[in-house]
Length: 481
Image (cartoon, rainbow, N blue to C red):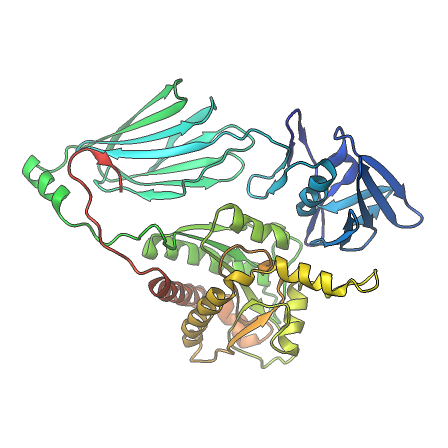
């Protein structure tokens, strides 16, 4: 993890405590001119700078920022004399103290403090009969690295952080199939090669700073056929207001195994297996750009999962889980979207087990209404209607997989849905605590059926929310569609 300010770059070493990722406070504030007053006996620490003050409390998920209470994603901890704070809370504490912008970029693992200049990279594509050109243009000189592998060319930018508005583009002509920004620590762009690809020529230019990739193609159709192909109507293409990017969250992971079935199956394993199948189907059948919050068995805290979706500007966020109940016969699928109040007691219990929004704590008389407002402000209020619409369609499709044993659409305060800047749902696929459903959850055939049902639900939502329009490209050498 890296902290970037206008004048320094520092590596930070986070620590994991349960689902939370924490940073040592002394690491964070070093060199920023912030005074730290620790009251170990009283279980409190005060950060101050000029007229600003922040108070934190051991094992409390609250901070007082210039007298205003703020809810944190997990408790502050005092361990061996060192104060540990949640990573995602750091910008909310430093910003007011420093009177400067502070931001946590979860996908890139970067904390930004102040007016840090972040290079921007734009992508443009151009097509002719036998060449597909992809141009990466940067706002300043950056180190591009190009690597070719089977079926793909990778372009990385060796900087801690770059701003990229481009997400994905599909190309016609068979030389290059698509260009996609995958992001991550290396700011990775992936160019998928088509069946007509022959060879690559890469050139860097200084003014403006850019990388030009020319993909030479094998001979195409005869000129008359090519002209006819150019002038022929294309298949329908999505409008600008379209569903393009989905982030899938396989529940739990690493030390956080989730529920365990009577036969020994772990929730963390089946959710990842289903998520991988769903990703492949969404890419192949709907042509969407899809990211996972985790693609291996690793710890990812709940707030980082939503932050990943926000960082990728996802159009949908889908968290996949396996249910558990003390009633061994409990069976079926439940789909949830966010609400501060749970639909029923069972939903409240489930949300609590999966990491619910904590109930308001009231250390100051009369503060509860403000805290409730903070909680609701964190929630995705503007997306509730769309989340409900998505949840209904997914519930209908997944219920069919188990012979209409769906348990309905419900609402609950799942922390993993808090802060999502897009429609978001949590799917409890089946009960891993039920011996019969545990066997299904570990079955490749059942996982495939569930993933296919999720795809159908998403496709129905997209059709209702983003109808497609047909368009025709101009003739000749042209910007790629």
